[in-house]
Length: 281
Image 1 (cartoon, helix red, strand yellow):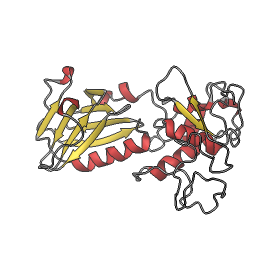
Image 2 (cartoon, one colour):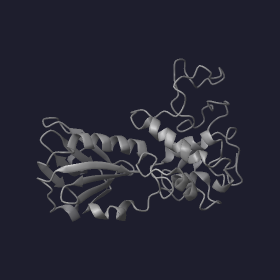
Image 3 (tube, rainbow, N blue to C red):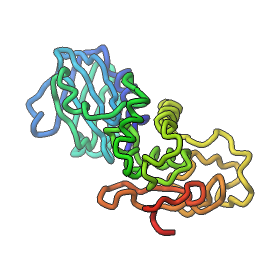
Image 4 (tube, helix red, strand yellow):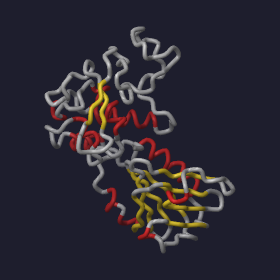
């Protein structure tokens, strides 16, 4: 699932391609919007809010979309072949004289008044990449339920908007805390929103997400899974069974929340001391 930095970067690209130009083509391929035609309306802005995309048009209308697991927006030149997927997966086409934005497999696509955007984003917590960023409020929200596991609290978009599974795992590692540690027991909890802001800001313009230092000359020789010349980009995410980049202990993985899809968590049981509710070693 795309995280806040990916959505921010996509919104920036869509804004550059569409904003300031009137639509020459509009095709919204979901039943409730089948008769909607925005052709002729100028695109005012494409704005990210956490993992949500808000495309604003003159006349006070906003097209709200969310990528969830595998949705995507692709941008094409006028004569360019569309390669984002088969035609039956297309949910939206927004074209100007210079570019065409095509939305594939969008699970959320709805049109609303711009004045009513809070109906779909008002529940979100502060966005580390947004103008509303407020670390004090983010901290208050994180600590509102002190017994909640840290990993779950970080994933809750009502606390911080834009944190997904990758950043959840990486933040817990950098905080030196088990993802199952009650968030109220986190040492120096103010570091959590500060680190979230730092990581997303550092990656919002990168195609490849990096949370480790840019060079790793200090990696211990014992870490045989790190090939010569390799620069690991993430501390623990996606490294199940491979040595921790700090201590060499095999990275573990488990479901953060067995009732939710795509909530797998990666952590180092040595660098992140087990909490009472951690999976058994």
